[in-house]
Amino acid sequence: MKILNPKNASWSLTIFLTSISIMILFNIYILTTSTHHPEYLDEKLYISCGLKYLHGTSPTLCNPEHPPLGKYIIGAATAYHVQYLYLVSLFIITIFFSYLIFSRNSEKVGILASLLLSTDTLFLNVYRHFLLDPPSMSFSLISLFLFIYWYSKFKHGVAPSKKRKNVALLLLSGIFSGLALSCKWQSLYVIAVIPLLLLWYLIKNFLSRNDKLSRFSYPLVAYVGGALTSYILTFAPEALTAGFYGVINHNLLMMHFMSLKHPLLTPLSAIGFLKLMTKAEYWRLGYKAVLIFNVSKTANTVIYPTISNIMSSGRRGYLVIYVGLGGLSWYGFMPSLLVLAKKGLEGNLSESENILILTAFLSLINVLYGPLDWYYIYTLPFLYFSLVDVLLKAGRKGEVALLALLLMQLTQLTLILAGLIPWKISLVI
Image 1 (cartoon, rainbow, N blue to C red):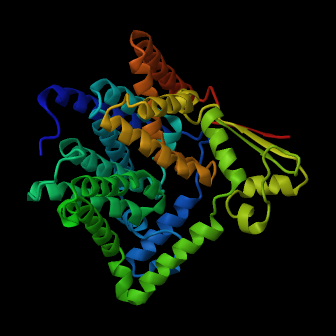
Image 2: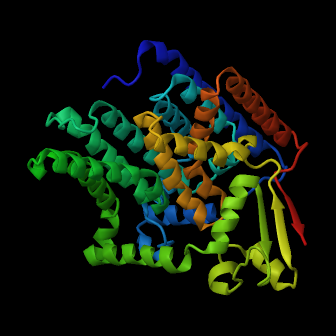
Image 3: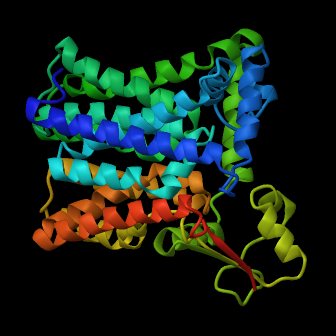
């Protein structure tokens, strides 16, 4: 499969070298400075559980809320002392496959969107921690790229070939989707576009051609087969200790966690979108408030202990303004996404643009779970794509605006690392 042609090769190398340079310099600075930076307590648990898994502990006995693969990888990276090579590798994979996906539509879009993404401070900060989301997102993007590559060759109305190469693309896409889900279920909202489009492909061709259903079922069967196989295999070590029913119970436990202990709550969703659109969180206690949040132990103290403690002490509001966390481009995400959605409904977008805009909307579901930084990395690549795509369609002025945004984000990153502007400002009202 020839992914890159000669004229794109130099730009591919540029994206690769730029992203690795930014991430390496960012990590070197973090490791050598005493300046406070955003920390995530979850990574300590994932490192501990990953090491325990490698020594034979069943995943059901340590952080059973999430699938085990991501913690196995984190544990292995820690055990073999390649932690930072692992983190940089994930960052490069994410940036590089974002470029490959976006450049299927336009070379300029691929270049500028991936460069803006690589300078986003929230994105950089999440990728310097041992969280489950970076490996999950990396696998998701590889899966999405393989699907888009297949989709660009076999459009609606064309019967899929039975050749091994064509089936292999979707089989590989399914395998990487399974690996993404095996790290964290939040990746579902990124890769959901693949089975949805394959199912639509199947139904459309079956109804329009009145042919045998099996004739058009190969793409969906190949994808789902690959996804299920890779997902199930990641539970193989657990099956040896806990048995088949132990694996089933583990998955049921994860469903319980997602539905009851980590539910979709309207106040959390509102705050999540507020952060995306304004780079600010606003929490308010009281029924007359714009945003109301339940401070019960089951919902609040587990997920947001700081906010819970402030509200429990009698304070009425808590405001967080993210000065340095998140790129300046955030203010243009939702308007650009809505503009492209309108163009898509009018039939003025290419097939690859339609796929990416649909993925952007689906990935926004992660933001509904609340304003946790790592949820945003699932949607940021596609939001940057929408912003860049809209501005490039505006012509010369749009190109100038994009270059200005890139320069401002690089300046913002430099000022943060120099300690001249804070990551965030917290106010208790």
